[in-house]
Structure formats: structure tokens, C-alpha cells
Amino acid sequence: MCGGGDTITQANGTIVVAGGDNGSDTVGTAVVPGPTVLVSDAQGHPVAGVSVTFTPISGGGSVAGGSQLTDAAGNATVGSWTLGTTAGPNTLSASAPGYAGSPVVFTATGTPGPANQLGVTTQPSAGIASGVPFSRQPVVQLLDQYGNAVSQANVGVTAALVSGPTATLNGTTTVNTDPTGSAPFSDLSITGPNGSYTIGFSAAGLTAVASSVMSLGTPQGMLPLIDLGSGTYLGQFTGGLYLGGSNSMPMVHDSVGRARARNIRTLDASGNPSASGKIVLLSIGMSNASQEWCAKAPNNAPCDPWTFTGQAMLDPAVNHNTLVIANGAKGSQTAHTWTLPTDSNYDRVRDSVLAPQGLTEGQVQVIWFKDVEGFPNVSLPSSQADAYTLESEFGDIMRSMRVRYPQLQMVFLSSRTYGGYATTRLNPEPYAYETGFAMKWLIQAQINQMANGMIVDPVAGNLNYNTVAPYVAWGAYLWANGSTPRSDGLVWLPGDVEAVDGTHPSQAGETKVGTLLLNFFKTDPHAACWFLAGQVCP
Image 1 (cartoon, rainbow, N blue to C red):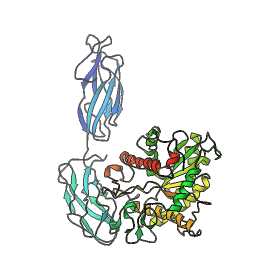
Image 2 (image 1 turned 90 degrees about the vertical axis):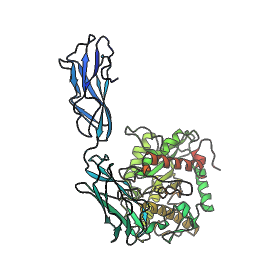
Image 3 (image 1 turned 60 degrees about the horizontal axis):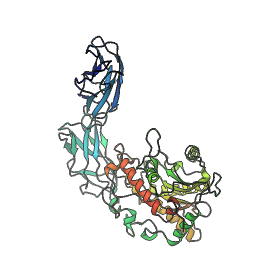
Image 4 (image 1 turned 90 degrees about the horizontal axis):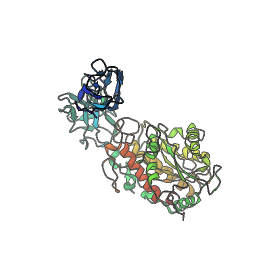
């Protein structure tokens, strides 16, 4: 398509590159010299007045003056071609319909601009001990204004504590960048009381950056609940998904769950049994839940194939006849936005999620729930810990769900994924981990209430599944301690979260959660019989 001077003649002549190809300029700036084409007739003579259209193909760049007429010499030069803001190749096409060789393609490489800011490319360990060097030391990178890595040696980067209790940051706190612009720290540690800490990194003339939150002292018992068992977190909070450190559901609760599964059947719009009706499996929660359940391309296409819904739609074993999987979760819709049945979130789900698919609230029988509050600030073991607030809010949400979805049979809960790579206060560790305790306590409160003569848990509130709440149980437990494999091998790596905040799942993270959820619904005895095709609940 594009070549220095190779031409293919035809009746109208040819278009070839005349200049401005294979250049290299700073990202976000105009290519100099600008791409130029030469238009000739069949005899090789320049042709004036031919309209040439210049269009960016890749790299995110833009053009001004994208339509040009050839001059008397047969040349046309783009008004200006501004490269995209991500370092790397950009391409631009120049087309003159009817001329051989059209379109020709120009390539230009965007190079990083001058260092403008710092970024943390490797976060320090989420869990640390006083006076002990972090097992994972931070690495800081010089970045231009658009976040591209800048290769520049001998820039001093200094680390200092910027949040947390009064403490001392030990080790080599100023490190010079290497030729790639990277400043790897090697021996940092914090000496001080238990608590949450953040390290700030600064360099002369550059915008500073802060690390993710590190928890000193508290993470020593931070094992996945499924592996903690009868052990304790902070010496107080027993592990396991259910009572007594067990991952197995108590017999009575299991029996009730199986009975609830048998009650799931196809319902019409009014919530009445109907052979032509539907079973609706709905997600409720915040952005992470929405992305994992059904991330969509910008054009609002069907759920991306690596998400839970996308994987389920491609799985021939899944019930594609009567089961409808709907995504009610949405970005920024944290727990407090679901606590009342009159909250607008429920109206949004009804009007924008269910109704467009010809569904109603009366057909929702199963919900997958995952949510948190943003910017937590009190961790366990404090009696004011955010985990207790979540337990209370989750109780309110369960009761609200029962009001809005009168045919709701059961709700499956999933914990947050690992938050140790977080670069913001949105939901870092140990709060992401402690969300699992809030869910464990909620489920335990319902089990206890139904077993002990209806004594209501003072935090979770009334969870009677015969009157005011749905039956609740664990879905897929999603937390693992970073790159340390849990007993089933699950790990969370830096590439599993988006670089922008280290909190929201990347495509890799969405894929992991989607697979975990699909395996859960296909194998759990309270779900498989209605989730899979051709099954009957025993």
C-alpha cells in the first residue's frame, strides 16, 4: 500500500508517498515534516486539483486539514498530523479514490516527552512488620505528562512517609534513576505502631506520587478465609466461610438452600409460574462487580466474552432457553446506594436493565451480590471498623431486595478481590480483605437467627428468610493474598488490575472472576440444577 516510489499505473494514474513517512516526534505534537503525497497521471505527469483525504488509522492521533487538493506539482500535504498521547507507532492513510496505490499509509513513532511526573510501577508490600524490610520493594518511574515512561538517568527520587501513625521510614530513602528512568528501592522498612501507612515519592520539578496503602501489624493473619480455617485474623476473628472455621455450609442451611433451588421455576411478567416464562439471575453491586459480570465494549455491545456473562453465553452446558443473566451492578453504586427499597438504583435496574429485555422485577429469583463502601478508614479490630458498617448495610440491602423482588429465592455473596496493588484510597488493603468478614458475619447472622429462636443479630438486623429477607449464602470467594497462591492456586497479580488505580479489574482480572463465577454456578448444588440445561433440582 505504501512504498517509497513503487507505482501501479492505471487510467487515472497513481498516488505515492512523497515525504513525511517513518518519522519520529514527541507524543501529542504535530509530525514534522507533514506527510505528503504525489499524484501523477498515467503518463507520470503531476496532477493538480485532486482531492486527497488524510485519516488517522491507529495510535490515537488526529488531523487538522485532513482534506487537501494537490498543487501544481501534484503534491498534497496534510494540514497537520498530531500524534496520539501513547508512545509507540501511529499510522495515517492518504486516499485519492481512483488512483492506483490509494490509500497510502504513513507511519510515525510517538516518543515520550520530558519527565513531568512520577509513577509507581511496583507497589510495596501490602502487609508489613515493624522494622522488617518490605518483601516487595517499590519501584518508581519517570513519566511524561501523558504517563509514558521516560528514559533518563540520575534523577534523585526521595521516599517519605505521607500518611499513617507517627513512625520512621528506614533504609535508603533517595535513589537515582537508572538509564530507563526507573528508581528501584531495595531496603525500605517502617518502624512504628500498627496501622495503615502510605509512602510519598518526590523528585525536583516533578509531580509527586504516593504508594498504595500498607498495613503494619494487622496483615500477619491475613490469610484467605478458605485457608484461615479455625485460625484467627488479629487473634480475634475466625476464618472459614461458615461457622467454626469450616468452608462447608451447615446441614440445615444446606437443606434450605436446596429447597429454595427447587422453588426456582420459569415465571411470567407477573411472577406467576409459566412454561413460557423466564428465570432471571441478576447482579447487584458496584463497578468491579459490573465489570466482572458483564463488561461491555464502548458501543454497548453484548458482554465481553471473557466476563462471567460472556463465558456463560458461550458455554453449551448453560441453560440458554429459560435463564436470563442480567447486569444490575453499576460503577460508583457502593453499598449505601442500595440500602433502601426506594433507592433509585432499583428503579434504574427495573427500567434500564430488565424492561428493555422484556423482563420484570417479578421474574428475578437469584441475585449475585458484591459491594463495598469507598474510601474506608477504620480497620479491624476496632469496634468502629468499616467491616461492621458493611455488615449493617448488607443487612439493609438484603431486606430491600426482598421488597423489590418478591419472588427472590436466594442471594449469593462474593468478596472483594485483592486490594494490595491499589494506588488510591478507594478500597485498599486491609479493607478489601475485611469485606469478606462482613459477608461471613451476615451469612452467619442469618444461620444463627434461624437456628436459635429468631434472635436478631444487632448489626445485621432481621434476616428471617421466611419473611423479610432472601436466603443468603456464599458464592465464589474471590480474595487471595496477591501473588501468594491460596490452597486452590488462585493468585492476584499486578496485571489483574487496571494500572490507573490498581483497584478495578483489568481484562485479565475480569477473566479470572468470570471463570470463578462460572465454575461456581455450574457446580454448586444450590445453583447448578437451574443454571445448567436439562437439569432437575433434586
